[in-house]
Length: 400
Ligand SMILES: C=C(O[C@H]1C=CC=C(C(=O)O)[C@@H]1O)C(=O)O
Image (cartoon, rainbow, N blue to C red; front, side, top):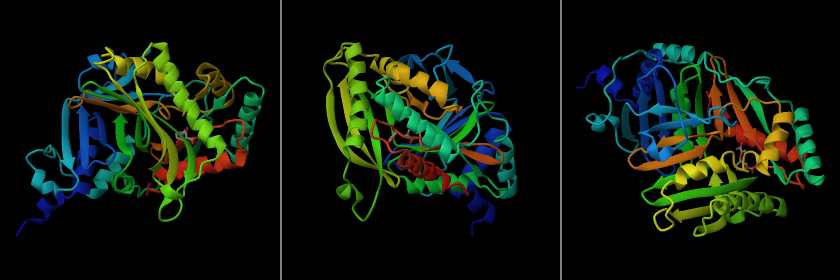
């Protein structure tokens, strides 16, 4: 008969708990993700204790995981976790059967130790933006902000704006990171599930529905995602009816992408959509854009578009610079890494960078949940508030 301790080691929850707690305890950086519609959990460890900063020339980077805040950086750089160690777990196969491929545990800890170490290491992580607040936003403050956005649009200063807010959720002593991660993994098969920990920078857990840029071989891909409604009934995709406001809101994001292509004189691209897609219990409108980088002679399209697209009008607004200024003046929120971008770079020949949405920043006692809502001329402030509540819940309800 197998010994109890051997069984425990090959229990996925226990294994991930020990692994994450050990890496955290040793001050290392860790990223873990599962791509949409995949059964493969990918784990990357950077053994250096100091966060690295890299230019956004992704084609030249080694294998790693990139993390960039919402705001443009003075040095134009992003955080980068290098793949000192990278391995995969197939979630559809018992862990024990993958023993030769996964990293052996360097320490076996008891469940209380795991929780204690993780909780302690959630403590000192922050990228502060001066003068911006980490206060949760009241309903009145948010609806006033939406109102202000609508006024600015009516006055012709802006076409679209995406104000965001912060909601806090207390994490009790019993908070179990691994159970929360597991619950998110199984709840959202269509999302990019991610967890990353950079000492001194932040620890985040999310389920993003939005690709910013993806490159594989000669193929480049991006998407425009916007418009939100609650998924209802047995066949939510079929029952979806979109208002003019939502159709316009999404069309603006598509226009933004096409404008970026125009800026670099790229004329040959494929645009498909918009179609209705499911993200958690929400529906969005999405258009897909594909480019053959070889045929168009744009081998560095990934980097070029990354710099042009961030932040997209799905998280900032249009025109981009004016929307950014509006948010800088009125939003008063430190978005930190929310609405920035995250994802694997040059991992097994593929780069998949996502917008950091539907996510929580984890601190010792609280989770910071962030959500924004696309505001156009026809926005109703109360409805935008409700939309951000639903978006916060996507991760919020799994934090236990
Ligand atoms: C800003 C967010 O979502 C964006 C992506 C899809 C739909 C959106 C919307 O309907 O407003 C947003 O543009 C968020 O999740 O916080």
